[in-house]
Image (cartoon, rainbow, N blue to C red; front, side, top):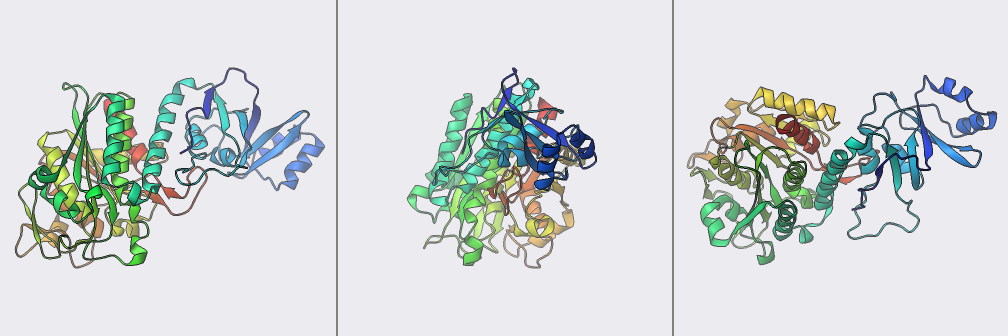
Length: 461
């Protein structure tokens, strides 16, 4: 990714081009302060002051920018993103407003995934924004980098972002913060996390399944757990997906990317928690020893699970991880997973489907999402739907056949593996943006990450 650390800098009076923010209503008054040729140039660029419009106007020896926004005194995360995308490289400052949350979009607009292809030679240089709100720079930049980490990991193809690479990323984050780090694999995984092992056992040796764990924080602080689904690639298993369904399956580890990025943010900002981060990392591959439809798996919790469909594998590995997280008696568990297509049918790609046991936790997350321009949408954790998972030969099935409420039924499955009385929130996120918008490139996307971080910050900051 491109380095965003220096895209927002303290304003110490450096030379910079001014950005004047206007609305449709305020444009006529602003235009009266311009010369005739400047007004003509604005008109020639068809600038009307509509939100998202950007125009460059010469001013003697230099030039300034006019940008349309809905309200210069109430900027959101994306109000300056179009400027950061459209303007040439250089240094800028707002002439009539404070950037506030728009510092996020200014930086995220300049994200580029460059692991396999360098930026074109004619790409603009960095666009730097000066601000007097110096105290906000570190946290906003940390959030930008966390979201970029999610995008980088999700954009990376499965061959280079398998379980071993997820482990390496977890180790890097742990070492950066002095956190404990452990990995369970092999015989210990088969014994202690049997569903994780069963889902991942068909993969090649270099993509062998494992359970990744980070621990950080003081024992006296409240214990929380963050869990992320780490399916590095999902063929669907023996219930194989069609080719079209596999095209984006490199992103099926998006939950793991969210969990690791959120854990990194929690540690970097020093929230007063005792953190456990868990990533069950597997590839749902096909070979002679792949788990089968009709198999009955034993879980870490002791529940037996009949396999109705091998393509409902994410809930299996999460079940073991959530059981393990619950054994530590945390006061809160957050999990992230690219779990169901049903969630996308219900709320589309932009909104992570949110399930919680507690109404207060749901409202905290929804409010944080609204405040940070990272919206979520709550779906019901409806107890009667758990009946859809009944099995004739095991404690439960991993899927249901009637086609109703798929996201809620999957969440009900997970609920069986979370300890009684534990506050729990589950994000069924897409982790992908199908089309670009200002500040939000096409590809891997952090959806629900900022909402979760600010919820945690509100509780434990």
